[in-house]
Image (cartoon, rainbow, N blue to C red):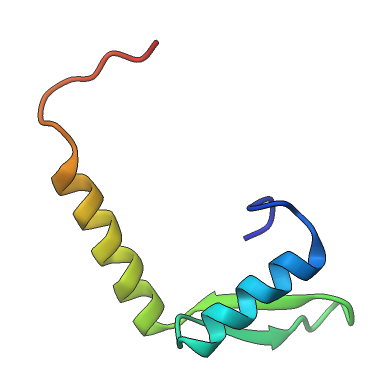
Length: 68
C-alpha cells in the first residue's frame, strides 16, 4: 500500500483498519522497525483480489489496444 492514496498516515491507517476488519489483510509489527507494520493479504483477501481482477479482465474488450 506504500505510495497508494494520499500518503497521509491517518488515511492509510484508517484504510488498513477497514481492511483488517473485513478479514482481507493482517497487520503485524515490523520485526526490524518499531514504527513500521507489515500488512499482508489474507486468504480471503487474495480470493477477493483474484475475483476482482477476473471481473476486470472479463470486462475488457477483446483484441489489441492502442496506447496513446
